[in-house]
Length: 145
Image (cartoon, rainbow, N blue to C red):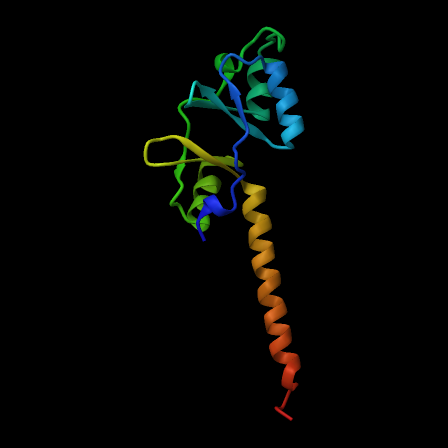
């Protein structure tokens, strides 16, 4: 399955000029760990809870006056909308990030994949397989009577 089928659409975004305080509010309302930072229609970076803790709180910056553009992670690691969910999960684990922006062939942001989306999808697939196996075993019972 392609990762875009699991991804959040539209992706959570903030303009590059948004303040860190606005980012905190957005993160809370999205119940996520990060959002995409946009400069116009171009993906400029990402801002995560870790970025805020390390760069803003740890750096003694003012969340009301510091913009996300000043503390965002950039450049951004992205994946194609054609990326399979398994590949996306491997990339996220190897890069130690809990989110992955999905972009089209022109680099436009199309979806936002969080590791929890992948885990939930995997759990649903496993639950379906378990139900199928249980139904198969219970139809005839052991021994084929």
